[in-house]
Amino acid sequence: MTADSADSPDPRRLPGKVYDAQLVRRLWAYVRPYRLLVAASLALLVGTSAAALGMTWLVKTGIDEFVRPGDFDGFAALVQGFCALALVEVVGRALQTWTIDKAGQNALLDLRLDVFRHLQRLSSSFYDRTPIGRLVGRVTTDVEALQELFSSGVVTILGDFVHLAATVAILFAMSWKLTLAVLLVVPVLLALTLAIRIRVRAAYAAMITYRSRLNAYLHEHVAGMPVVQMFVREPAARAGFAGINRGMRDAQLRTVRLESVFSALTEMLGNFTIALILWFGGRQVLGAGEPLGGLAAGLTLGALYAFIDYMGKFFAPLNDLSLKYTVMQNAMSAAERIFHLMDRDEVTREPQEPARVPRTRGAIEFRSVTFGYDPSEPVLRDVSFAVAPGERVAIVGATGGGKSTLLKLLTRLYDVQSGSIELDGVDIRRYALKDLRSRVGIVPQDVFLFGGDVLANIRLGHPEITDTEARAAADRLHLDQVVARFPRGYREPVRERGANLSSGERQLVAFARVLAVAPRVLALDEATSNVDTRTEHLLQGAVHELMRGRTALIIAHRLSTIRDVERILVVHKGRLVEEGTHDELLARRGVYRRLYELQYQDQEDRAQASAQAGPEA
Image (cartoon, rainbow, N blue to C red):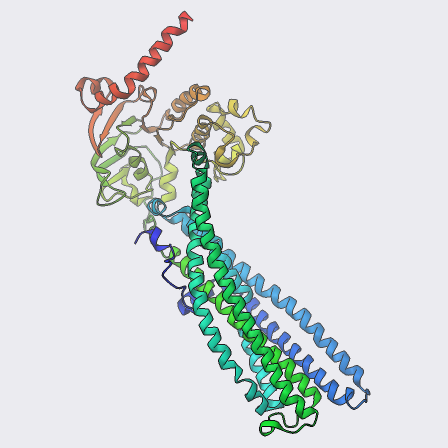
């Protein structure tokens, strides 16, 4: 099962259990550090429920002992007690909400950090198959579902059960016969709840599916909006989005419709119960006899009021419990998806005992390396070559031949399937990942810039690099000429994906990143292919500055980047077929000669023509 399918809800599957012990145990690990807050919240909830029940009892006492007899001696004390309980309830509920929300938000903070930390550990192959929008949904939408669980879930459910038990006990104490009679409605309510919740689960399953598709579709099309606009795909994109959007709306409306029907029926059953109490209890209070075997025998006016009020307090949490059924179900489904992601074991393994290599010389050796993104279809086959410390080696070949894959394997973005890669005589799998990647500096073809200013993108999270050092590295590459047009210079905020910088300027920032870290091994992945005329001369100077004194592997796109290298490797259909200098390879009349004639000769002819036209002009 791929990551894509594994994390995608199946529209034919209903959401998971309302309670899953294994998921709850894993969630509890995040709540445990804040268990005192949870315990305090539960205690406050029980206290507020007791205060609410006590207020009703005080009203009953006031009616029976003061209002009906017309004797108000001591009535003020009862009113004061009522006000005190009301104050306790208000303050208690405020504190209860604050404590449980604080515990929940802290637990979710830790969970989000763990999910993000795990996302950082997952291998590149995982991201090749998994839509980014779906992963964003795990950290946002699914965690929000857990937030609802903490704010109105477990603690409130426990409090509701305590409240129900206390209410039933009081009702039985006042009239056990009448209580049994009115509780006959409860089985009807439970059957109704079960019937409707099954349908709600199906509607919610569809909503989950559409929400996941909506996130993935939206992320893909917003990121690719320039392509959508260039190919006039706006109507088709809108139609696709509208279809998913309508599906999500319809699923949500089905859920709302069922919930509203259930709420109305529950309200009707509650009102029917009150009508029963008024009929039987009211006749007893009015002295009209004891209908149905004395169901309300001995019931006073205050007790009748209390019975009606307590039954309202009984049905309110009962209705809340049915609603929390959905909350719990949503939370369990969200937790299942989150932990399913966190259980994915597609991580790049760290060595148990990392190799200690104090100094990097820059010797690289590929030994019979075979690799494929799909193991059944190798991209590289039995590739072997060595690069001496300080040597500059270019890698050329047709598109799709496996050139970029060599650099990804060198930094363990992927691991070889067979063979080995050594850096300074040590298998790269024996290096700690941080240690390996700090020794090899890669300048990719497509540069990604993050939020922040230009200087922050050069430092890129390396606190050991001072602003002065970062500026010095950038100045050596003449990036100061680029930022001179910005009002804030190196402190100019970078727009999303570097929109306020040209492709060549973004490449200069990538060069400065590597130069600031100063690795001994340099890997350029066609790093000068996206070059605008204005920055071309800056980039050529930057390349030579970067390669000075370093071992360099250069995936060549432009002829100018390989003229000064000591050796050229030719990769064809995943195999290393030729190696030598430019002149040697041309003389062999092999794959390199054909590539040169097809691609590089045309560039050289244009360059020569331009050089000849210059003096004449």
